[in-house]
Length: 130
Length: 130
DNA sequence: CCGGATCCGACGGGATACTG
DNA sequence: CAGTATCCCGTCGGATCCGG
Image 1 (tube, each protein chain N blue to C red):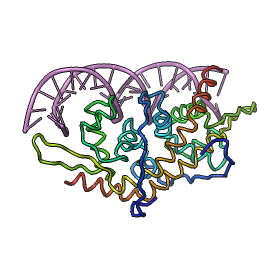
Image 2 (cartoon, rainbow over the protein chains, first blue to last red):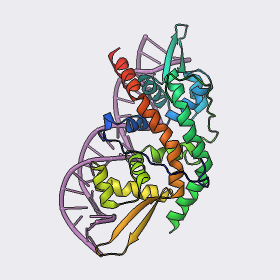
Image 3 (tube, chains in turn yellow, green, brown, blue):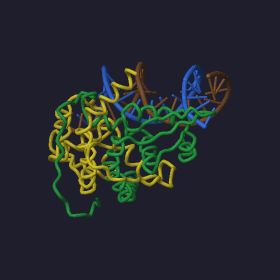
Image 4 (cartoon, helix red, strand yellow):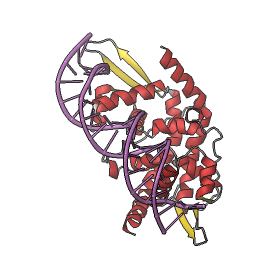
């Protein structure tokens, strides 16, 4: 997980399907890589939240993007949307089992990012200087 | 790794730094989430490659995007660029230790994507139908 | 409270042509 | 061979207003 850890030799296989829609990696990445997806998944990993609660939690997300990202995540089966017909109606979002299973590999990446963020930023500064 | 695997309860902590540049997750994701980054990292995980070799390997990448993505990955310290002053000059790209360390969490995500791709596509079809 | 509809700027990414 | 320079367009995401 750390760049200074003993180096295991890792080989990733090139996907043979380079077509975007048929390439699993690209298909998942294009969703996870969105600006707000991981943030929302992180929030929902704690517990289900209602729309307005998510909005308060993330704070700098626009109404539009929250709605859209939730829709996309729901479409892919990562989260479930439940409407309670109260007045006014309340809507709750929760992770599905599929969504929860995604958290495992996602967490690995998040931990890596936190561990190596400063290294990356340093490399970036060096590159921009030279 | 599979959605049907026994469910461990995972909680991801919300990053307190919501500012884009200071949030490690977003900072890494915005790079990895690019259209070509993971493909290039996968290729270089096998062995170093020269520019034209990468181009043949990826095939449907444009010259422009290959150059730009390689630059970005180099800037972040994931790959190293070595110029051999032959005639005509040849340039070789290779993973750095930092880049190689990224492959571990990345592979988790790739494996997950391959395992669950069909589930996601099915969910997507259901959503679009209903 | 939970959105949808619309307009708009910024950026990612493709195609093509040109250079050392 | 390994790029740079332009042009162009589609999508992402923000702001704002409107509706059940």
